Length: 558
Image 1 (cartoon, rainbow, N blue to C red):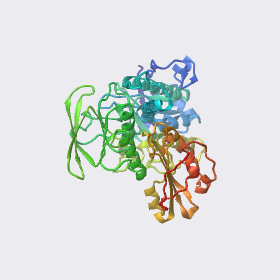
Image 2 (cartoon, rainbow, N blue to C red; image 1 turned 45 degrees about the horizontal axis):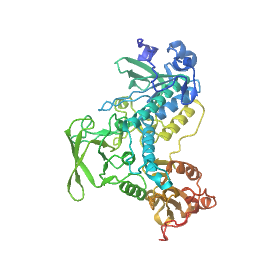
Image 3 (spheres, rainbow, N blue to C red; image 1 turned 60 degrees about the horizontal axis):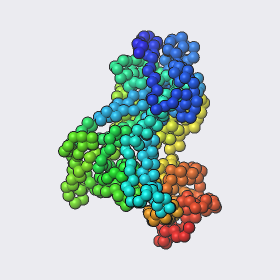
Image 4 (tube, rainbow, N blue to C red; image 1 turned 90 degrees about the horizontal axis):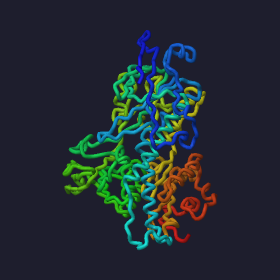
């Protein structure tokens, strides 16, 4: 590796940076010549597109003395999107990303949480569980799974994990190539602000470089929290979602602590591939979501075989036997009865929230304000911080939904405003999302609780219906588990302010209806739509029973 040198100019601003050659070794699983379906040449793959920074470069292309026009701290979805968009305007763009390994030693490549330890591996493991359910259903549709029909279906944890890892590595490689094509200079290094224009970047081997930038974007995301109890601290006897997706051994019996969507999704897919799962929930499920829908999801998990321990506060975790996975016991107290619980298991997964990854940045030192409770960066509607040239997007920001598409949209629109003459800002209202539990849940807009607070209960009309999806009828399962709900404001012509759906393919169904809510659709607009039969989505074109009426909301017939 070459030497990284920094020459100081007046005022302590680095004027010359000689960039080290960054090792760029493709992973074995990726075929050279193809990245995410796009054919590239070997020269395109390996050529470094950005020359070393010099004062001549800066003075001829920029009206400022800094090395970069735009520098992004964080290589997740939002940061990557912002950097690549900014490069389209001929700006000199840099990006740094650094993954601190988990206490268990898990690390990953470029792409952030979603790609490496979030949405992508989660959805793939969810799919593995759905396939298991389809295999159980198959005999009802005439399929012979085995000659005797009573052989136990097998699932290989290690095969699934290795296949998922290979796919993720191909995505990591694709992001590196995307940055090269966009001529974004990439640093695999940990960032620390020296001032609002100057960053110290420290690589894994201790090598340090200082860079300067006119504008800086912070997009560092978040990481899972641990518990401040014996056995629950980092490096003790629990893991998190940062570890489970690449766990090299079968986890055995699992206890998941938490009631978040990460906890429920993980419980669902682990249970779906045949793992014994216990959910230990302190208070409510899916805090911040519609609570009637959350409770329905809890009932689905319980019916599918997940043990649900409610009002359960963990006190300590002990290891009784080392190994992979080893043996552990989670001790807890029921907050209502006072009963002491002991739950033996092999693996303990914490899903108790996430914290922003900003502590090493020295934000306080440069004047970037953070929320004293959450630790997240305070931003305005244009993603600006309290320092004029510093911006932030994604999960590290206060009051922003922790969703990948939200960070991408915010990053792209920010770059368009800064460098492309754009004026659009991200609309953080009516954002669709899905929870990938065994029966998936999708929603857009307000929960019933939020709608009552904003519009008052007497001004709302809530339509609902329960129906069994056609594909569930032959195996006779989940007969009345699927549920659809619309929340409408009566004084505004029954404008729809909340959409909620529990059933198959919730992400696909919800994405389509999100546009309707975005355009302020009213109930009569859906009534005038002709549904596609037979589907679950068509229920929203025929839904007519209101909660207020007290009528039976269970759909019969086809």
